[in-house]
Length: 302
Ligand SMILES: [Zn+2]
Picture 1: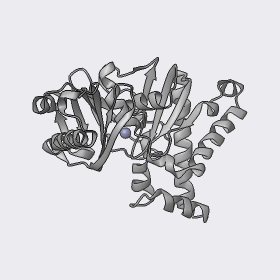
Picture 2 (picture 1 turned 180 degrees about the vertical axis):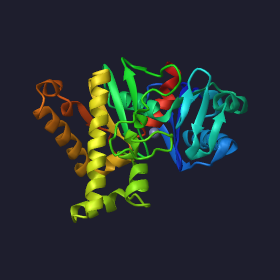
Picture 3 (picture 1 turned 90 degrees about the vertical axis):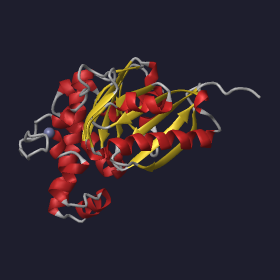
Picture 4 (picture 1 turned 45 degrees about the vertical axis):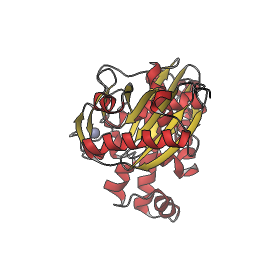
């Protein structure tokens, strides 16, 4: 009987669900599962343990055949210390997640912010060279970066938190304490807070198509805000590729064509912007891509 080559487990612990997978020694997904996230410190630790046990069973491996576990999680993550703070949507104030999980399973555990993990995974799965900027359009709006295969993590784990750039003249209040944050116009939480408590994207599209003024405005703010985020990322990092991920991308053409049209409109008015080819750099993360879990599995490399 041959011993399998060591594999890496990666998981994306989200507000409602956790996606976890085994990446084999060649970087291919070997087994993949998804189930609800339990809230709070113990809930998250238990969720991670259950994910590891289920993946071992599914892939026919034991923990001996696994060389690392990587976790992508929302909030302020210190990759060096393995701590996560302010992950309020999963009930975590501050947790020494890497050390505490490592104690329980006896394997090295590394943490990354979920959007940074998604950027690592997208660059790997889409085989993107050079500089990749990943824009997550989901409950919030945030970015992650990979430069020549290396994720950019910054000094305090807040790299890419562009949702809290206070740049919108509407000046809406943001839970972070500022007003006019990008996230208050261009995010799923903005749709819920300022358009409709359900915030359902399909309903938004239907209502906007029917000419409902509130829906038209909400969609327009979302499109313009996302385009502003992309322009910011192009100016800051001059990425070779800009990947749009996150649940809102599933709104499809009305959002994605809207973003490209907005960028092209700005370029028409500015030879400088036109020379940047902003909309040509955009790629959309494929439907169902496990980018964040794959990126978490790969975070042992750096
Ligand atoms: Zn804010």
